[in-house]
Length: 397
Image 1 (cartoon, rainbow, N blue to C red):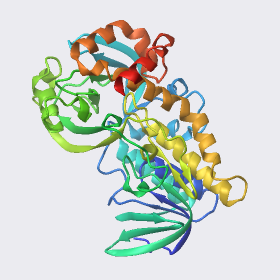
Image 2: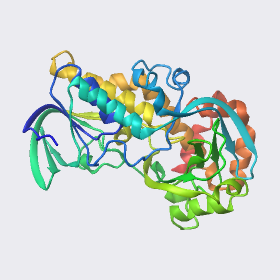
Image 3: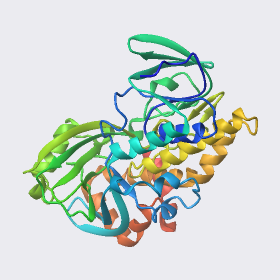
């Protein structure tokens, strides 16, 4: 366990993909960089479906992104399965097969890999360390039963959805209940799994306002989970009950899932909101889920977290070297991932009226078909849907 300094050049709060990527980029420059995380171990517990686009899909999803090295060249032992298709099931069981080259990764290994790169570059890491407050250029942290004030030149906030650290700041994301999803997932063993396919299931009885998923982790193991957005939760039951229904009652999925046994259980929050207009305030940069930098339509956030984190680290370095103001970070992330994030939110808003009823879901998927779903899953909006956005946005207001 390191001794926390009273002063540091760059302090990063959060040791997930966004924070670790920021730490790696910042430490390469030689500036003193400290990453803190409240967890006791990097990458544990897994709070992710662990599904990623393959390197060759990255340009299809993020065509303007250039800071993608960490998404393209990770060690082979991190990849658990290589998938070829995403199958989307409508509420009435009709399936739509969407070609999509994906990787199911071991997130624990993946996060630890980036952490090791950051440490080799010179970053310091302090676990079991919680940021309590940011005030001016001082961050108050708690570690080993002590409160310590750390003075820093740049703070990068990578502490996840609805982080309280931004309370009172003008850059705190504004959420309605439509703008985030509770998620719940079991790693399920003892089931039959097609390792080349990721499955997504819709339906108000099983995943109101979102979808349920089966993501393979081997021939007999999968990540099985779902999300629930509260305005769609008409049954008023817990998210655990929805997962029980999906595993034991769904006419397609339950045939394989009901005999499985849980190997781990995790839950959390995923943003489904628009990205911040600005992720910079004074000497604070906000990245990843803390800045709503996730695709709101499907809840995917690792690629955008890594890119935003790296860009934040680069921006912090340029600022400290007097090359550019911190505000340049907004220009960088908006150029590389901004359009995809905005598209994801627009798609989510267009989906919201549809997700209220199963017959609407069935009709919408039939109208879209596999061709348009191919684009939507990649964060691209078919031209025909552009006209629907103002209508959907008006309805949801």
